[in-house]
Image 1 (cartoon, rainbow, N blue to C red):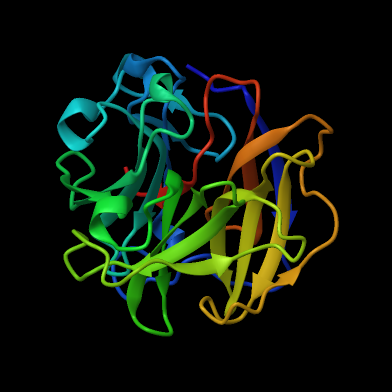
Image 2: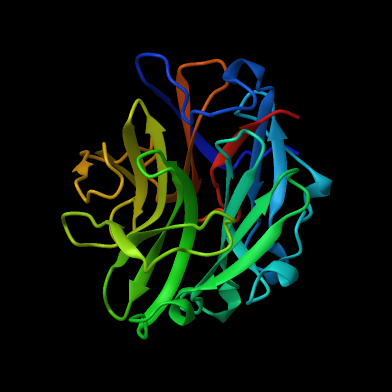
Length: 289
C-alpha cells in the first residue's frame, strides 16, 4: 500500500550533519530505510498505532495489512491513541514512542493524558500513561493534551517530551518536561517551551537538531493555514527566532508536520497532513530493517 495523502517538501540545508547524532549503534551510512508510525482516522478502531516502511523516504508500504501493531486498549486510559511519534535512542538500540491518549468520539477537549513507551525491538513496548491533570498541580482547567514528541537534549543529557496543552479559554501552548531514566514518568512540572509572539495557539510541534540549532516546526491553530518555523540554540531558553511565512507548498490547511533527514544525503523532508485527510502524518525514524 502506498500512502499518497502526504504533501512532501524537501528542505535543503548546507553542510553535512546528522539530524540526530548517536553515541553508538549504526552510522548514517548503514541505514537502509525508514519506519513510519501513523494512525488512520477518527473512528475508535483507527485510533491506534500502525507501521509502514520505505526505502526512499517518499513511498511507504503499510505493514500488517494496514492493521494496528499495538492494542490501544492495553496502553491507553481512553481506549484510543493518536499522533504517534517515534525516536531512536542515543544508544542506537532503544526506541521511544509517545502518543496522545484520546478518542476523538469523546470530543476534542476530552483528553488529559499522554502515553510513554519504550522498546528495544520495535515489537514489545513498555508503556506508562501520564495524566497531566492528575500527576501535576495547577491544571484544574486543563482542556486537552495533544501531540507529544520526544527529542534528546544534549545540554542536559536527557530526553525531553514536548506537547501542546490548552487551559480554559486560553490558547494552545507548547510545553515540555524531561523524562526519567526509565522513560516511565516526567521528572517535574511541565513548563512552557514555545509560545508565538502573537499570543495565538500553536500545536503539533516537531523539533529537529542540526549543528546545534533546534528547528521547531509547528501548526498555527485556529488561524492561518499551516506550518511555521522557529529556531533556537537552547531548547529551554525561551528565546526563539520566529521565521516569516508558512513552510508548506500548498495553500490548503495542513498540520501534523514531521521532519526527518534522508539517509546518506544532506536533504531533509518535511511531511505534513492535509487537514481534511483521514491519515495523520507523524515523524519518521530512520532504522535498519
